[in-house]
Length: 375
Image (cartoon, rainbow, N blue to C red; front, top):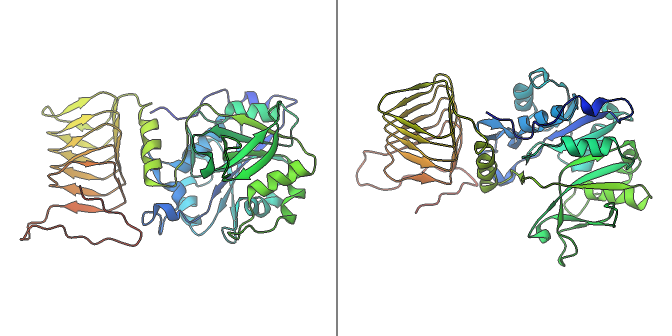
């Protein structure tokens, strides 16, 4: 499977004369928009094409030559540690930086102050997904003179974002949070480059109306103090994977890069069409799989149809059902469902089954913050 954004020469960013970067990845936060899936789990570990979003961030940092990475953690620190360990699997050296509470992005910089020292760093929100990676943007910052650089994306609805206003040279002159007037269509996304100058700003920030130390206030503080803040506009897809539809869109983008690979077992009565990955131990019986799609290790698919842009997690069981454009997390079971499932995000160890109990009815046991859409 292709690694989204893992492009470029990872060593070119380390040539003499260029700034060396540390990576600061934020993996705290509550993930309230993805509840109940994130009620007890880290939102940064939600899978895109069967791989946690957080893993893409680490891969893209390493691809840009950033190997020393600090991960800011919150209540789900143990889960993040179990997933990343010491970082060696990614070619990185990882240090974990516990944050006392989710008090804002700028507070994460304060939390990491001692570890960061006077080094330049790239702060990467662990639930953000950039299809094209950060290598070119990192090189722009490391070879430039600006004390900070922010990544921007042109959007159709700037009132939903923090936006940046630029001068003719591409320097940031002002940041505005969710403007009512269309003063700019360049949204600030979740990757930032900073020099040590930011540490002269963050201790003096005051909490916003939502009780957090805002990164936009820190950047504006740099501008107001006379420091140059550069910008880099991305052309590739960017997604903040905080909602179900965002997860499905990120999943679609990654699955579209798949190359066909069949490591599991497919019987003679099954059809596998297009770019499909079937991991080792998966068993496909009397079923049709139409790519792009991925079937996780140890999953079983029997008398079923799996359509495009679907990711089936490890150990799942699909029996007599149809599903497409969906994400099914590991160890879940979907059995004997006679209506197609689409546009769905189904958590871990979930059972969706047809009941033999009469009268026929929809019987639900649904947790807080759930959504059930019955067509």
